[in-house]
Length: 382
Length: 125
Image (tube, rainbow over all chains, first blue to last red; front, side):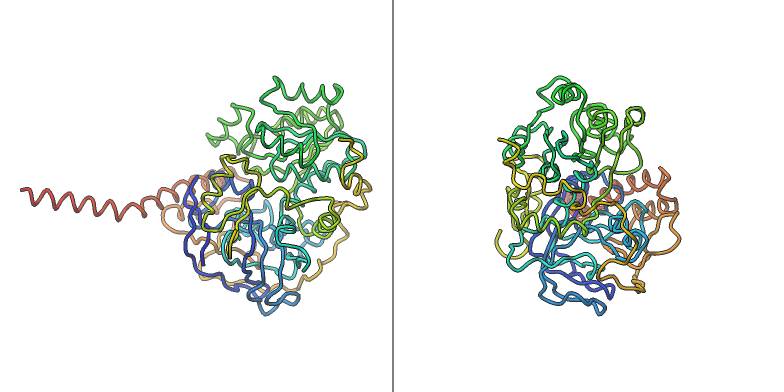
């Protein structure tokens, strides 16, 4: 089959690889019909996630049609069209039983950080990703959700990651009706966090970024106020003033380890003295009001970051964070898509055949051509 | 735009409509889950970090260890994942993996150039 492969930092290439096979009786092999490039794939591309091995295939946002099912798979059969959560979860362990599928302890031998994740280095289990023609999906009766026949692939594709992640980001902020929410980052996850903040009854949503085209997109797509942090002197002071001097009730970090805005953190990140730049977390801690909530859905790698934990402690903040427990959000978010409350497909700006995946990566990474979200089409025309 | 006009605003204002509330649910197997889970087999060694007691029933087989980077990774996985050296060695192994890959790719070309150069030198003599 054809698959995207990692060639070392900043280099990916589409090449031939052996087709995936059933390696466990609860596996299915999926023929991938749509797959997307996630902002967190860029951390892999840039060599920032430990144990990313040359030759592995990225991709944790995908959907497709069941090609082959293992002998213990009961709920899926050949031809079923499914969306697959990025977490690989057994459904029976201590965490899965509590609906914390992102923490499953039966899919990742390499670390105790998280469950297994498709195409996200050996740190999360060493599973091949979905930016390929075919992919192996373990625990197939637990994770994948059937796509409704009357809905197109692209309407439901983002239920695999970014839509539930954005929603969980807003949910962890414990937003009360009428509250002011600041979202750092106007990428796809940030956009869905903004949409979700409205669903939860926020009174005001303010988006922060530095790319004018992304701010304009957020304004139009999520109907939010925007702040370009490169155009204001001190972004924390500016945001506090916008929020009546006290600060926001809730801040959401939808940026992660490759944040702009602090030369010191960028340099320390490049020198591997910390795991990327925690600028968005620190701005969240400084911007939120005392007693407020900070929600972190941006990805950070181990082992450590320089975070203003003393400020958070003294301000009495609640910090909540997690990889998204995707499966539990899928039915409710599907309902929101169906009812027209969220236009998930509306954030797609680029479509490419799988063969052009390397070009798509570079376009997305360099934020060229007003790119918000790239979708790859492994079979047929983009 | 008036916020009242925003499509769906407040649909999940009641925490009971939020799928992740409460964060932990009453323990119960998820729909479709099967017990016991058969152990996946592998033709090559699967690395577990030093703090892990037993292999999970399912794991990935994306890229087996090879070369010097493989040796470094093997050593790194002897340490538990709360040790900084575990991560630092893995990051180093990633760089070595990339250099090894470049070397493997450029070696045939380098060999042709060296041999060509030597042949040219011999002919000129």
